[in-house]
Image: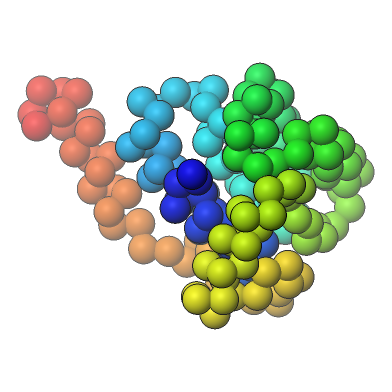
Length: 173
């Protein structure tokens, strides 16, 4: 009923709090399944993960900008949120609270998405258990590999993909 990538997203969002991984997982899914539509529910969830990643790094400007974009997209896609097992009314209250924290430059605190589907919740918890994650644990703010992951990753494939796309646009590919 739910895409496996969505389950993985939820497991990382609620398990190891690896928001960078959340972004990576859903971005790949979105590219393959949504014709890269920028107002897709997947883009909204990707931006939520990016905002949360920025917030944890005290990048309040980036966190606010991406959360505002996420909120705009997700409000337009609230029916899709419900289909994804998210209580949209509680969810938008949560986003408002997060935006207030960020706007007031208050530090990051871990939070959970309001899932109403108990079967989805069990799928996420099972994925966590199978992969050595703990559903609902607090983010480890001292883990520099987690907090600053974008600075530490290998970008070789991203650079190659961009160069290939550039060459294609120029007629060289």
